[in-house]
Length: 326
Image 1 (cartoon, rainbow, N blue to C red):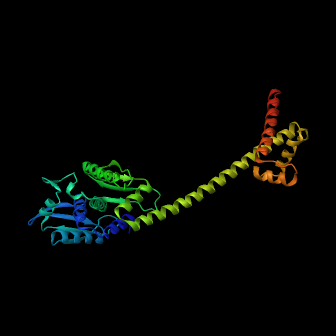
Image 2 (cartoon, one colour):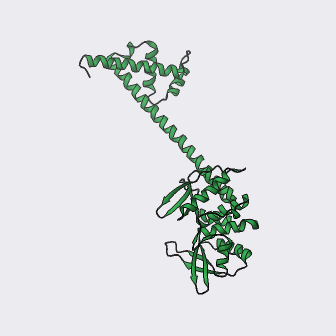
């Protein structure tokens, strides 16, 4: 089962207060249904790939409207070839659409009726219904964090986003910021921030999914931190080796054209120390030096003397250029 489906199934296991059930069903029908006409009149068709979601919707509709429905099972034509479960509401279809204030003539309204979202619990149920109907979220195993709700109705998504922003300004704000884009023929509200996705799932009531998402995310962040530290160590080691290689080149240049013995004592002993320890880091050079000398030297002191050696080698190069030498 995909992570998106896990979230939706968990949301459809939550017990809704009676005042919230119409808000939830209103969002489901608006976002994921089709209308049909047959010899018995109008029908509402609601389709999902998971039977637990269909069963949850059926139980709410039966409680609210005391209707009999049909559930039709069909095979998907796509590669997965799983089942599609379609809930067909024939009895009282027009009454339900009217009761839920969903229609504007012969088409769905793009507004959200205020009567269903007066209470904070009903607002949450409506947003949860919208996600169950037309939402998805990437698995936390995927580092490309992404949660979205899509529709072909841009005005409706703007209204849904306004509802979410209204919740943001409430007593317990979500602190999330959905962005709206167009994707082919549809419009998409989406989140990319893992923190915002966790907050949103937690708000909807998908507690187990929230814990799972957060656990996997924290594990990945920990592993990534370790990898970054290892990469930094490798990079620092390579940098130190490159610096040591250049220092040895400078010392050999001095030895060839001047002679190490001609250096002042403080530079001479460091030059010999570097030649004897070609792969040692600055810290390791200090440790070797301090082990064999009464007068100790710090990293900055060691670095200062190595810079002096570099300056002397550059001076030799410059004199060689003036004399036409390589």
